[in-house]
Length: 86
Image (cartoon, rainbow, N blue to C red; front, side, top):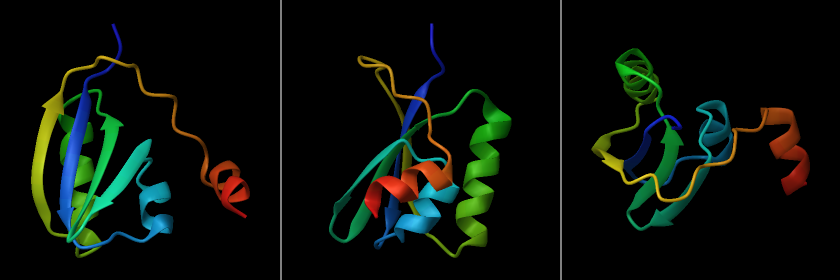
């Protein structure tokens, strides 16, 4: 069984670079919010993510665990992901 998958909703649009730095696997924008998904293996990881969002000045609107119907791909390193978008 894989790690739990969480949906995180934040106010506003989050820059792509910040999403990569946070290790976000997939995301989308539902104006005026950004919604992203990622695996969170334990409480410490969840609290670490929330603290990083706070440090970036990003307002968290909602965090919820979602059914793990489709396993998420492994997060790519920032350099790999940036090359794909270039």
